[in-house]
Length: 378
Image 1 (cartoon, rainbow, N blue to C red):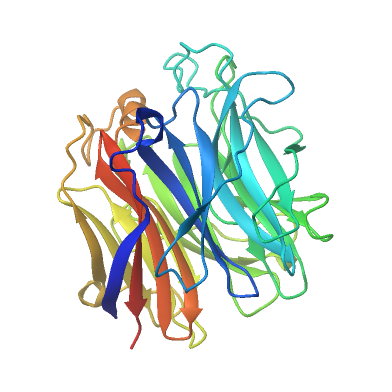
Image 2: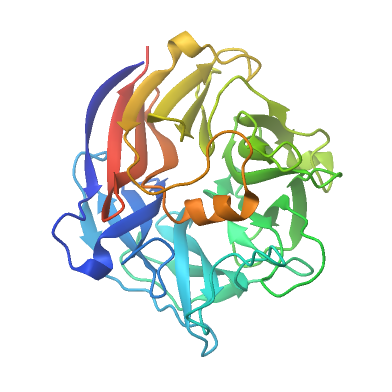
């Protein structure tokens, strides 16, 4: 693999204070060849007035222009912030964008409650576009009956038969006194995203000590089959495990038949990409020092990931005042660090059989932009 080119999707340098922190990027390519990149923007990470922006490229990611549409952040009359702009093309030219909405009616409430270990009250939203992302409908809620603390965890999946699956995770709400229980899920739609009437459990530790955070999934050539990578945190050991890998199919029933397997790849969030030749790529953020964004590859279905074949896409000198290292992680402080990290959130899509487009956010605690990189495969 070779890093062929790089640049900026959205440059936050010199923008007004409320637009200087950009993160939670996403990538979508339409069947016509238009590329869309969405991201969260605000005065800081998880800002009280945080919202999303969209950009598009008509030349395979070499240059980008901002789409002027602005999304409302209120829901049912309640003040909120929205994060993440994950898109999928349900029908030619018709897009869906999904986002996580957080209740910000109490502006002083922190994201994470150290007493109950719950997060802001949240829900999943979806809007529709008839014109490849230039204009959008009003938000509507995607129901998650019986699940709380729900947030998006990467791009939706779409198979050639039209099936769409929305990836998200559940946890618990801020003021819920019940024990915390984490799980990674899919909501499945057979009608182009109009309804999501099937729930599929991707990963959950029955002992509730290992958390499979921030699942990133991609489809394979087989209808209903998907590959997953997970930022995996072991609460009992007070440390992150290496990135975990899972291969499953919707035909398995209502849940994956096996648990994710630990790989040799160190890091947190990791975006998978299945190649036409059978290889699997993993674009991984590792917040060790120095921080890196690396593109790994597996030629044996995810069993091995040779370190000497990994391509370093970005090296990051983290200047934020993070407090937690690799061991003896304080869970409450770790949540606080999530508001501080100034790089990460990998996304990966194929341009053609031998070229991959990557996006991520990077910068300083005062200014974060959305970056792109083009990688040529051997």
